[in-house]
Length: 235
Image 1: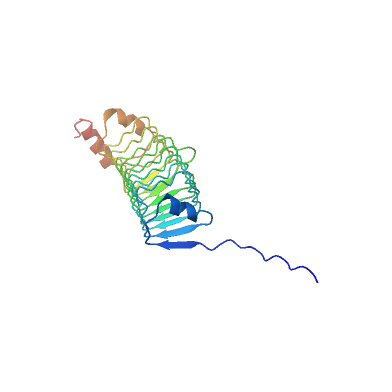
Image 2: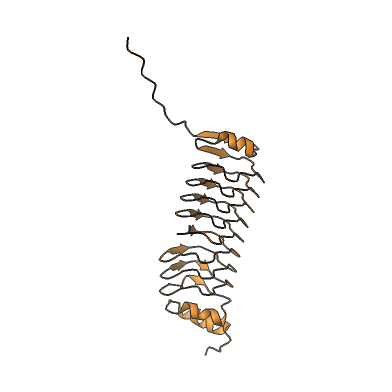
């Protein structure tokens, strides 16, 4: 009699957790296979350094949740509330953020390669020292955000509000702006050569910012507005 062959093993199906309040111990017990959290409350939970690769967060409360150093690559975040969440040094490669509120969240030194933010609110978010290729943004509020040295080169930017944002040393070369705002942004040492700025609000430009636009394209109306804001009389 031949010995029975071992049964083939298959990865567990994605588990769904709905409308639960979860702390570090509860999340840690779920680690292993991808999990989908729907309407769960993780406010102020310490989830630092956990492996949550491939997880999905839908309609979750993530205010002040600590994801520092966590593995969050290939995750999906939809309609979440994550004000003041901390993603410092987290791995968020290939992650997708949709219709979510991450106002004042911290992404310092986070890996955001191939990450995307669509329809999100990120007022005051801090993306300092993001390594390598940064994320993509579309229809996202980035007012007052801190985005130093991010590269947007050759991108087509749609409905992004950078008003009062820190865009120091950002690379906007060859970028096309569509319904965007750069009003009162900090543009120190930013690069715009080859950019098409006709779809951007350039209000609040200061004299020393004007040099950053050398080689960029603006409309006649924008030119008149800029000269007026720089204190020149246009006749």
